[in-house]
Image (tube, rainbow, N blue to C red; front, top):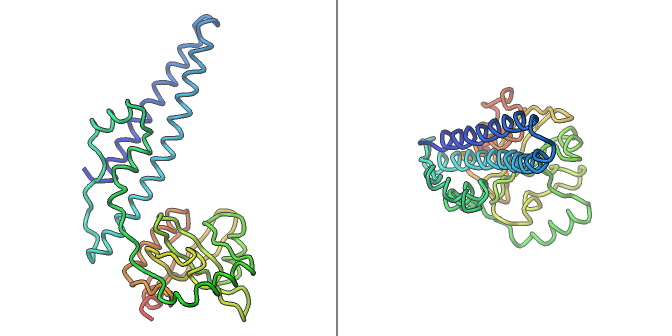
Length: 253
């Protein structure tokens, strides 16, 4: 069974648990008050845990998708990756022993995360680059966070996918005299992918116009661009309108 299919099965199992507990809550309304209070409290606690685990599972599924993109890039294509998740019976055993669903899922594929492939090619200037960015108050942010709208609407942004599979962005320029370097995003640590992008939008609605793998410091391959595109899509950025020809052209310069 593939990764996405396995994740869908787990989500379906959680939904069945949630639906079953909701039915119990409905039927419990007819019990005497002295019997129902404790039952209601326990059900509410379990439902809260289930909803949290559903959210964690979705996050894990996004991470798995990024890993699949990396596997495809490393093999030169997009071969279907076999699921690194544990068999369902083993999952049930681990869950019954007290491990959270997110812990079980993360443990099962963490060893398959590709190592960062792109390293800073200009380490001698790192201290000056970080010092300058700190003085200017430049900090990497995620899609949709406070300040993201201002950055994208002021011009080109620089982006990177970190070794923790996080997509972070910074402005390319603070002004005409101050270019911000990719190394600021990870404090010089290696990346899985990096480049530049042009994005428009506001208040959670964003459209990707252009994207490239241009980074003089990390020098990522054009194949790694797919990982960046996947990461932006996962963060809710509309990638259906960007000029793929333009992106490829930029990636090859």
